[in-house]
Length: 441
Ligand code: PGA
Ligand code: ZN
Image 1 (tube, rainbow, N blue to C red):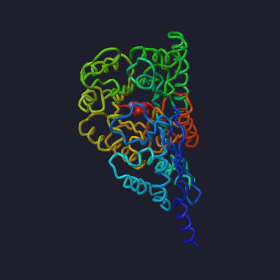
Image 2: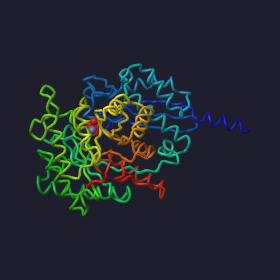
Image 3: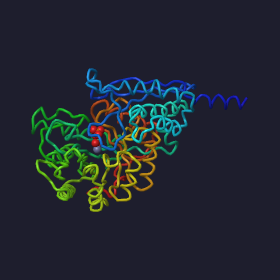
Image 4: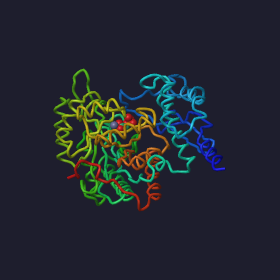
């Protein structure tokens, strides 16, 4: 009898259904959704996000390029690949064998950057396999990922002033973030961040008029500002007006996304209305770090410049996180190169930069081993999928970047974290400022 029960239990994890479809992302562009179900009734549905300031080393995003439909952005080929190529290969496999299934899809694709089937195609299935297995167990996703040990609620990096490719203004730096790391719990941190966001809205309206409170792709404001100090001053003012102490309760962070203002034929950076030599840009960052409570700078130089990254890391890495996003592209080989060259001390984790769950987890685990802080991240084009919240808690990395506390494709992740914090209850730990090399000034 016992044997029969064991047999049925094992059977229940087997995949019996895989289906893809085309849905819309937060920019109204088509994206891939995949559905996976197991014999035991477990279901996983996932949607894939899309970047605007995409790194050159990211895995391939497959688009139809049919100009008559969705201006070429359609993903029907990806959907076809799920339904006609991937489905028959993975139906019947045990959904818990994530690595095997991911490897199968990587082999089916056969290219180094998933260019044949598309990383968006493969990732949608990979995410749904993970969710279907968790659901068959009857476990919340973060528990399936991290077991009993999963308990750290991540410190949010919240982009509340948008520039660069995410906004129609003149700010060169793409993201000006607040980090409510000095608050007691995730819930308090989220509340404080919302309060700062409301004050910022008022401050921007007073100074620039109503036009300034339009929001960019990630829910942050996109005011008609011209330089970085203007944005940083507004953030400090908003923190103060909300009744918090800058640096102590809430710190600041930047994502320069410097590839987007690198002028390659000149070897210079065009930022805040001026051309900067790389070493001048480095000095500029150091000035900003001295003037403001900045605890993290992402992609301070363009995506090939390991050398300038390591110079900045050697100068400020003992107090500030230097984060590689486009630099590493969630790619193990690039991360290893970065570690060898001491290029950074943190890595942004975007599942669709690499294209499978098991490779994403491998990069996270390696980063933790070599003392690089992983930051689990959304993309500027998002969906209602909240899996990154579970990934952050399941891996206990302690950091998430998922935009302003506005627009449902952003808040769905924060709201999921609120629900997870209820499930964890007194077992929950808030990462706060502990993830930074030193406490902010
Ligand atoms: P993206 O931007 O999703 O447009 O690439 C996010 C980031 O650079 O961190
Ligand atoms: Zn970035």
